[in-house]
Image 1 (cartoon, each protein chain N blue to C red):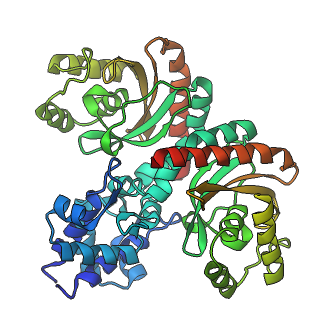
Image 2 (tube, one colour; image 1 turned 60 degrees about the horizontal axis):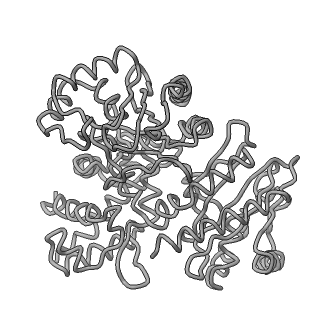
Image 3 (cartoon, rainbow over the protein chains, first blue to last red; image 1 turned 135 degrees about the vertical axis):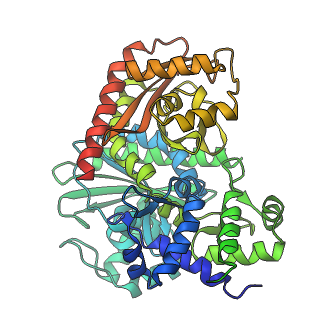
Length: 248
Length: 248
């Protein structure tokens, strides 16, 4: 066993993790600064990752995440596999609403988008680094949290319930009672919890008796999301059936 | 410099590369067999990649590509970034056709899907490992090949023009004249080149004067794809404009 192995892989993932949606292209010195690694090490590891297609050089000599890494990531069953099954149902929901339709899964203590369909004229969404949303302040996040174990709720409470708007859930009491409502009714409606411009509704996607994901629709505060709920529930049931069929 | 660094990263990418769309979940012994690595090495590297979220354990103790790797891959500008700009235009095209709409980029000597929207009732597509298509036999691939350098054409010819149907382009003469037509007309129509059940049309997406991607629409052989060409061209122009705006 080579004692440096963990360090090498750790360094490589630190380099990959330096890229963000806001900074998708980084030069050598920026990578060295963001990772705390010496420039020669960054240069050597980046060259190796370019050979494997994990990174690509841009015309000006900087680096970006490579198409090959995207292709590998597309094999993640809990992200891309789910998305493939869900997409036709999300399309139907999009055609019915022409608003923002989102599919999220749990990743750590956050909700991670695996799909987001937005029309040209849909209400703008708050764009967040890395495509993640806080569990307590997003409709999809509340659905995931409502059906997760008590450890996750404790971790979220320990992390603090950050306030985004006047309507964000910031008390443990209100969070617990909202989660109980979500479990009872099967859906959640969040009016201006994360963004004062929007209202979101969400429902769970089940697979094998467990909640694997949530689908949400985000509309403008001037729209009534109530009439969307039957279509949202139907889409989630369709995805659940598709996942059960795909698992066979 | 640690002489084993390249080996460690190489091994890690060999392990990741063992996963395919057909086999998205693999056990230790399968991974060892597919990579030729000793089982203890596979176990150790997989454990490290699980810590970083690149891999995930399934309930039965096997491995799958992790959501975190998908998230990193989603930062690839030439795949996910392009897709984000393109998606509303692909949606429009999908709504107009309710058939298969595809966005492809060049990766090595193949065309790689970065998006594929399929309706419930669209003509079924040939599903190929890894989401790749041969350049000479797919409409999107011919568009990419027509606008690439002469080295790529030589590499494709050296690789051999595999026959998929009676209509596949398998001679260098026909390939060269088709590519010249694509450059002259701006679009290509492939009737039963890859699959006897379908006809495909494709057009290029330009950015900064270069062809960055191609969009194709695949319909049944009983449909006339001609009327789709104006909508296809409009979608490609819209994506090109979006990319130019995003680059500013």
